[in-house]
Image 1: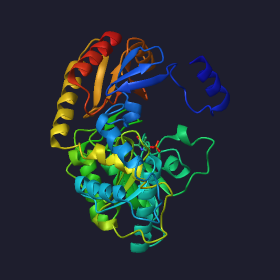
Image 2 (image 1 turned 180 degrees about the horizontal axis):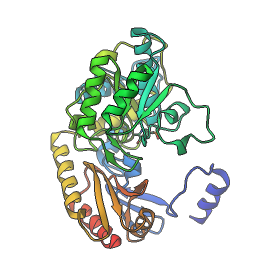
Image 3 (image 1 turned 90 degrees about the vertical axis):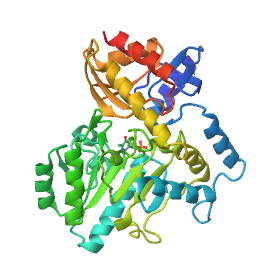
Image 4 (image 1 turned 90 degrees about the horizontal axis):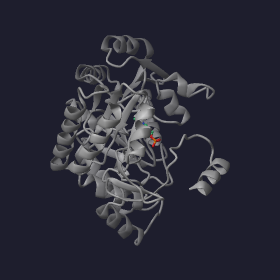
Length: 387
Ligand SMILES: *Cc1c(COP(=O)(O)O)cnc(C)c1O
């Protein structure tokens, strides 16, 4: 560990504030450090390990594909990416998929799709993408521009032009902005994750969907964090009874392997032609095989369990000593604690529970299949620490 810390300090760019902890192995929702100490993992590598660490089915799917072919590029057909695209369309209501390798790339893809659609349909002056203040859409220069938080923009300007920001849950304000800027599209997270686990109101989400339909504005939902079962539905917009024109997803889809998906609905399905977009690694058969293993298990039975565990977390934390409020959806939970969130997370780690933060909240993103008894044990520790 000391050696690794030194190597990291000397050779890794200093973009991350790491916890002083090295995880060497795990199984499901339990992980182990280099001294063999056990932790209940409520962070899942930031909503990535949908079925926890070293999940048997996922390992079997990935290793079977590894032994066949690991990569061929998009110049050839491979089975996993075609099969996965069909599954994604069936679960999301979208019509076509483009594969990339991360959340930011998936958002780049839906933004490109929206701009091309609007340029062809309405004219090249319809390029602006409206996003929300306090949103998070990624770290590339375009997705930073989409991210409605000034602190991420400083010293990286000029960012990609053509973004305008509205306040979350202020439908009138958003409509006013849309009337001013000639929008190509509107991009939202149904639950602002990095922004503090803040769900949008149903009225606001439905209002955006209606506005977009009426004005032929591309309605885009960033499901990078909320997607693939995290909120108790396969995709978070399904909690609101709306169907977007384009959806991005990533994190939990690969179960630990890098993958991002640009999903295009009816209106946008033919917007990309040959040469309009591409990715060397995108649709990689290993990542797709892992994703098939994840997605095939996100069925109504699992989602019902996710919703039940969510209800358990809300009911046991709401009103508990030292806890001011609990927000979120499904197994994406933000807890406002009386003690500083960073301190709560640190003490929980000492006591064998790994949590995350989001802004001033303690954030929980447990595995979708976390056993109820481990969840109860971990929530018990959090309550103890928050007192
Ligand atoms: C994590 C995240 C991203 C960025 O994903 P990367 O894979 O880190 O590029 C984009 N949008 C949302 C909502 C996210 O939570």
